Length: 477
Picture 1 (cartoon, rainbow, N blue to C red):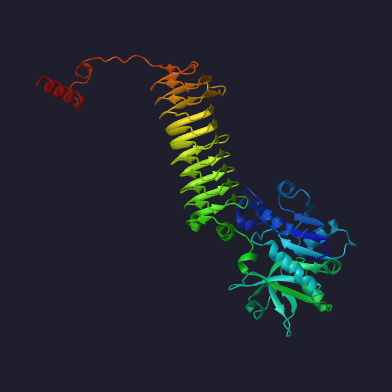
Picture 2: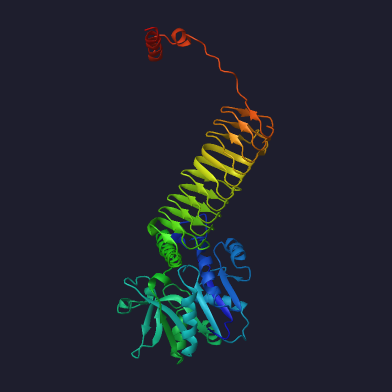
């Protein structure tokens, strides 16, 4: 690694028209929990440069605001009119002390698959070779559209020529420049000041710096990296392809750390997910900003966002957002844990149960067909099937408290604010509108009344009336 790296320059000013996006600038599109720009900045962070300078242009206010959130120490530099990558670098260097010696790294803002290890190798080769410039290159099957790396008879890099300016012979070259460079700082400053716009685009091309330096007799080095790592993102197709490659990289790292991924093709994790050993991820799992404890099983068909899961818990066909799940918890199938849900150890949340701002105590069960909102439930309580916590009066939300070892009947409604004491029971079909003392049985339903002969009088000739008549005849016999 360099003794001194005065700057990393990230070029992120382009419009990216091929993204066909009105909602976002190109570099703010992304995947796996980061924008394209965020991926590049993260890869460069390991270089520990004195300055990170990001050139912004198209929709620069949005890009700058995003940059402040992901890398507050980075310096945005405005390229108000895009006159080429060389022009962008010239502007960026204005934010770097001119007398700072060492290596400057230049990166495009749309290469999210770059790794810190590759950038470190680029800088190391640059310094060990004593080069004026070192290119990161790749060999590709179809180089159409890319700048070609032209080498001399001795194999050294002589220049880089853009596709539009290349001859037919030069277009046959499969080695491409990836727009990733390491430069001697002083030599780069001098060379960008001598760039010409005499080319097909009428722009200042940064690759022309290579020809300028080589023509002056300076050594130009190159490091070849896999094309899968250096690929840029210019449209939604390439965005999806990059996401797939990056997801594979993340999953392989987790699997090598002791995580079982049953079906990597349907499992998606973000870069900020932390998974302990012996976790099993079943098919169709999506994890974003999560912490998964040792031995847990997630899925199938489970989506967790900003959620923590304790050891040995099993979440099946569950959606959870901003929830905290303890150890040895089971949820699903078809459970929905909304923000503010906290499940203590050993809780069971069953089929078609929804919770929101619910704090559920150890060993409590909410087995099926229930809604629990704005509630505190104690330990080892059972909430009966088809229970609804009626938390909203049309204006405000209200809280319900259920104690320890409570047994709620099926088809209960708890009309908040209300409290059920420890050890209490509530009868099936009850609408609880008043507090229930500890150890009491609450019954809140009308007495049953049977109106005999109602079907025969009100629904004559129907199948129900005929069935009732047959039953009456059978009883007479």
